[in-house]
Image 1 (spheres, helix red, strand yellow):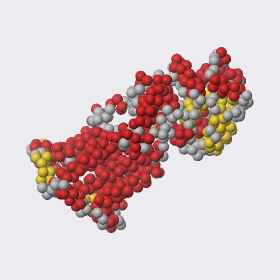
Image 2 (image 1 turned 30 degrees about the horizontal axis):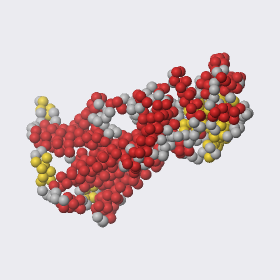
Image 3 (image 1 turned 180 degrees about the vertical axis):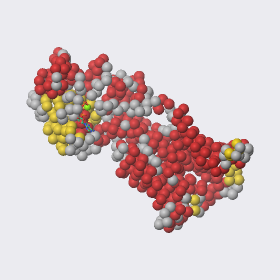
Image 4 (image 1 turned 90 degrees about the horizontal axis):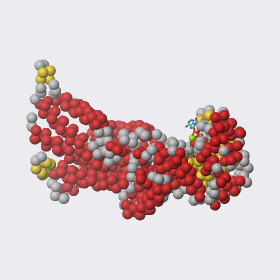
Length: 291
Length: 336
Ligand SMILES: Nc1ncnc2c1ncn2[C@@H]1O[C@H](COP(=O)(O)OP(=O)(O)OP(=O)(O)O)[C@@H](O)[C@H]1O
Ligand SMILES: [Mg+2]
């Protein structure tokens, strides 16, 4: 399906930049936004992540796929500072991130979502959204007391939040507690809330899990939209249709290592991936569906 | 049975100084527990900071009592840092253990013979609150005169403390209300639910938890000061564990994460407490006997009162888990 679709200029740019890259694990990119080297994390005896080298091309949508337990979430945690690797270095936008606390990454433009949705159920949808904005004056307690110092900024934040809610079809839930949302709506809310931080790199851990098929299509559009606004997207996904549909580049992990990289078309034809990814014939049929 | 006396005392319990100092301490616990989800079981320790801050101006420093206010606040900020630095990065239960232990350590240190010179040992400290009472006399509420009408009859001394106390409750309640309505309060409420989500959005969770712990602690300190000023005495055993737990009970009664809850909860708590106490004392005066078995005598009143308070709390949890002022809808999203 991909070939007939018309691509936005930014999508074309990303695809042509990546077309020249080697289709091997750890391949170099012309303009990497995120680079990791020798990142390793063990849990007891298990090596959860052992990545020699990866690069994520700026302005592209990169999918991170792999079987359950491949280490995708763990890698996300490491790169976003939520977990510490035993060895390794990684940089974001040229900046060494090894010693940067997890709460500082958002201010630098790197934001992530979680595989298990973390919507704050006792805050309303709009309050969830407002929380996402960075650099809020009213978040200092001495300003908190004097609403004059933050009312104006709050109004701007609210306006931005409402635009995003509109885009994610959550406007009608604006004043409900987030706990009243369905599982799929919570995924949407979490993604919209992450966008409130004005990121340059968005890391989404299984954004489609539990979202109904009709909505998936529009989520795809949202993700493409992020790239078309100039953001870089790295996302984890199990649904090969969606990976094929939306990504410019695919990185495949298995047992903690990167085992393949390439364009979606390459990956769905790669027999090593098919074998490693789901093993048996079951996996093969899934991959073929995607192709 | 003297119903008018019971009624008068109950009303006094409702608006009395006990309700005042409970309300301020509960407000502090509410900031920590209700809004941020921090389990501080050592509020009594913060109260002791305030009380001893005042007391030590007379006992040790020999300076004006008013210096005790900043002194107590400095103590409680120090205590908050001491409790928070090692624990706030860890799971919630670590803070609970550390706070309960720290409060006990404070109590045992201030009552020890070794430090009697500073803290007055188990006798505590007396005679430091005259400047406070003089101020009352000066504004025209004479400490020896009786004011009011039945059932509201107070000595000038009581009335003065009550006026200042309730003014403080109103002021601090407004202060907490404003803060919780602000983006700062929003971050706290978000931390209560999921620290990692808040961290991923770029907030320094550790720092916010510390701010919350210290703010709640300072409120506890102010509560301890009011209590000490009312008694004109500081006694170490007034700052034991049970005080923290009664205040928590009163807070839950009123409803957590509501400013109104932390004020009305203590009023109801002391209203019920005083009523039961007075009522049962009247009953015990004229004991009911069944054969040789006397149903109740005056020594039973105290324990039975606490049993009934506990029972009230159990019934509340069953029939109105959100407390008097809580929001049922909000409660419904617990544990999801
Ligand atoms: N906190 C932990 N303690 C112990 N082992 C862990 C921990 N987190 C992850 N692991 C292990 O590390 C490995 C990789 O887990 P991870 O969650 O990163 O996989 P994943 O690729 O995200 O899988 P899925 O697709 O199922 O989400 C697994 O074997 C898992 O058991
Ligand atoms: Mg995962």
